[in-house]
Length: 223
Image (cartoon, rainbow, N blue to C red; front, side):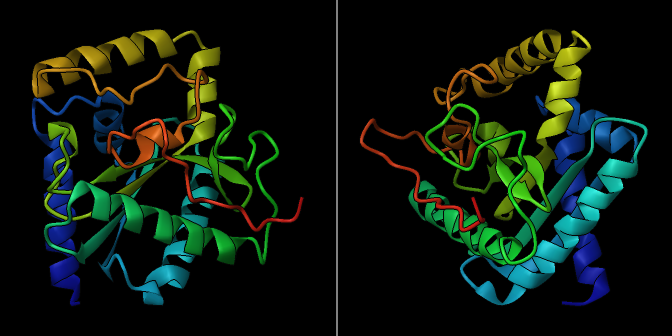
């Protein structure tokens, strides 16, 4: 993929967030402050870009840790598949998260501020000992706010949410996003839980799970 092609895809993603009605005001703030990083790679089912994804996210961690401001976000944008179903996207999301996590486990431990058990309300995805909340976007999502042209994984540092909550701003931010999402989508995401009340894995892909679903993620990090 040429640099020009990557720039076009990145611009499409930034325009998606910049849409006036897009509900996530935190993402809009990150965009305004030029704190969104992107990496465009090939097919989501292919492992060939996993090492590049990991290195990109390591750089994201370094940038976040050195930053003075909050509201940083990073997006891995995949050129394919073009039109995955929600079930297909969900499967690929966990494939890539597992594969990248396995590579990370060769170099780092798990962020000690969270747990690696995806059934726990204290779970968060960890790379370079920095926890992330992951948001999946794709054109076939049942949630309009997640219907981006390309399959995409958005990584937001978990520490940001803790700091926003410690500053007393989390409830207002959550309410604003939910109100905007209701206006944009016509309903509240049925998988949405208040921060810290249940495992965040139910919110990653945007798919509505039944009670029998079990998250396939299994950390290989040393205990």
